[in-house]
Image (tube, rainbow, N blue to C red; front, side, top):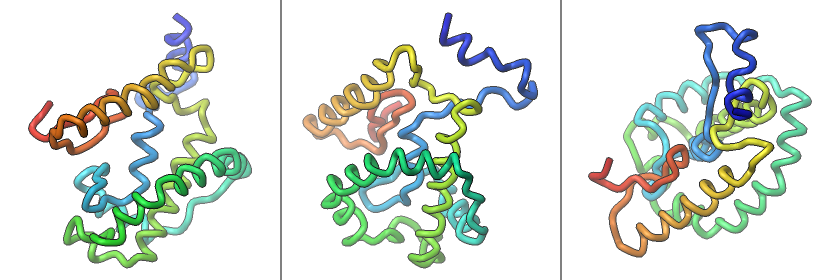
Length: 183
């Protein structure tokens, strides 16, 4: 009942056509990174979106967004350093633009600009948690968020790798590894 109250208690304040803005933290986080020869997480029209983002000005950065960025910076830096060999493997041999012809239109600086804009939008969503609901995160019970994102998905990925089944994406919203030819 508490989760229903959390999700629907502000409906009288919202525009009825707006609805509830539910997102999944890791799904949105991985969409910041451009696709590579190994890591493909974005939609098929991502190159068009990145082109548009590369042409626009940086969004306004609020004090609340800066605070959220400072809070998350140590975790992001540590994760990046731990995954540095994987980042090098992903982007050095094949290059960022090896995935599609449309990406060849963007320079490395334009890719970086688009990633920074996407990161700012992501941090803005985190900074305004009262307007955005993380699908699994609830302050009264953190176990579903931790278990699904850090245990279930990791165990599914390891099981898929162990069996040798080809997979195309890890979907954190449903907590599974989507296999090629699967549902």
